[in-house]
Image (cartoon, rainbow, N blue to C red):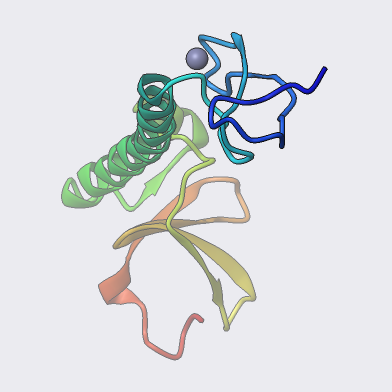
Length: 140
Ligand SMILES: [Zn+2]
């Protein structure tokens, strides 16, 4: 017996599972590149993928904003040195920075969140920096 697909030709495709994670139903594809059992599940899978990307970016952006706000608050209060414990207690997450510069003079790394940053002092305190105070040839 010859199996025929919906289009009536003899190139019968093996059944497969719907690629939409919440479905997973086995279906008979009409085309070789059909990964979803129906158009609705294709749309829902694409929307879920886009939301996952948006949420991932939003969470990182939120933490970067929080980190910058902690450094800016201390800077505005003329507090140019702080401790690990104070940074953490104010909500700073040391895993989130926008860029890292290397200080030429003392070969130290400067961790920046947008325009504010810090460097670790030898006594384990953190010196808060603003980009405007760096000489252009100081760090790269
Ligand atoms: Zn499905």
